[in-house]
Length: 86
Figure 1 (cartoon, rainbow, N blue to C red):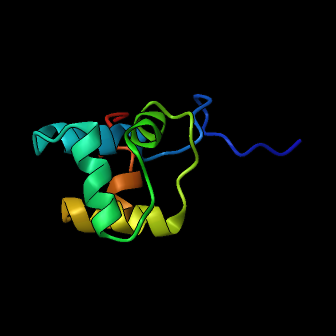
Figure 2: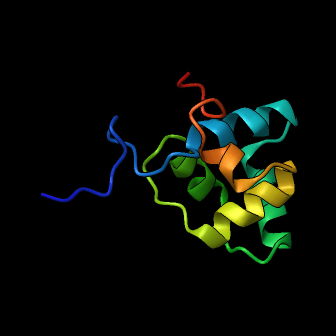
């Protein structure tokens, strides 16, 4: 049977890294959502919260916008080291 979830049941690999980077930059979830909107991505605070806790899938377009905001590569956002699993 096929599954679209990570081994730990999360719907994305980047949520923990996004949360860590947001906190590093001292941004609220609302402020991060506003930055995403400036990148042309329609996200609100609740969507950011769901991404960070792994309940929401992240599109490649959204991942690219997060990488621009955090000045990281998309690979860094999805790597095990970035999301604290290593």
